Image 1: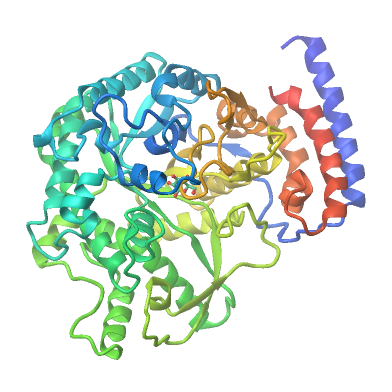
Image 2 (image 1 turned 180 degrees about the vertical axis):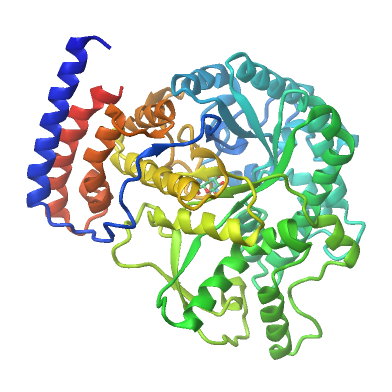
Length: 572
Ligand code: BGC
């Protein structure tokens, strides 16, 4: 950097500091929630081989829903059921635009990319015996080759929710014979995984079998809002989860037995979890309730896969008691046979974690109801603290310290595994004009990655990777295109689906380049400047769209836009 450029940066930096200081003196923290000690910025860096990545999922970005022989998935079916619903028919058209997308990653200095393969794009009916769609195989080969040519390692998810519709129709999807040893869906998932290892495994060294089985089971087969919209709140999610765990184990063993020696890759399952924070931390019942929440959430899958092949004790005991109270012969939570337990146990090479939010948990006492469901089964009350910033999703509050606590829990509970954060991100609304100066997202990434660094360097959690969700705006499932998660903005009204960088992509690039928050760097100074604001503003202040303190909002958005615009050239 030339002397003149660096001088002017320093001068601008000083100006920004003074400007922020003045504002900080007049600002009334409307959002609170800032604990000076807990939330302090930790300076330092991640290890040299730390993985910085971003992620997408096939249905959310590919489009090309019916090109060549691709079969419909359950999401295609749902999206087409209702004329008013957004569809993933074109989405970001990444099926055609993937080389340009790879350049977006390259620009940010990313060395890894997590994407998913669409099962019905490979096997149109989900079954190999019915035929393989060679164009689909070619597409993923080309994508992987282009990534490798650009020095970007693929991390591949086999199942990110787009079940072939034919498998739902023929076998009931993940409800197929959930208690037998000969469940068709396990074998079919195994065949599909084997085909992917065979065709792509020479270049893919990281495999994720399922993305977020919690939501597949709960929303797809319990609550029934997601496809296949099977509504059975008492039992559906437990049956589906049972099958997903066994299908995962099958795909793991196939890799282990047939491919690991030659290909040398790793296999995991991406589990999501809210951190459950006790509402009354001094009350033992509350603390137990919060633990129960986390065990029902991540433990539902992780306990079997990482600990002993079985569901958490607290989940089994709670469900057994509920079964008795409801006058049933057995628990609504299915049981694994001893052989299945042995088969499932330790079927993951690293812990893949998706983290978005935290909930505040209290004990509800024993809930006895004629209409039990997953949440009543936990015997908890959940909510959020008044000072946690909310996002366009009613379930998603920005609580960065929750990820540190959750990482500590994973270290202690699952034998100190390597942890890859496979998703973390923050949504905003689709707005006109577009939100390109996405301060809320910058703050979120800044604070979450700093909490991850605390987990790594202060708590000795073996965190190996951070993955930003998402590379670009995509089809956000039920809300369609009304909610945006991307580092890049996608214009969905433009037939070309042009991508535009958001400020967060520039921030992420600097974060990757600095590998954290090194003492004394210009980037860390910028972050220090922003730290106060990030902990005292919400989207209301920044983007002015949540109503509420609207007078204050617009004033703050003005104040905040200015330092950001001054700082922008520093980080570009
Ligand atoms: C899913 C993503 C989704 C995100 C936000 C995650 O659990 O994996 O596909 O976009 O949640 O809803």
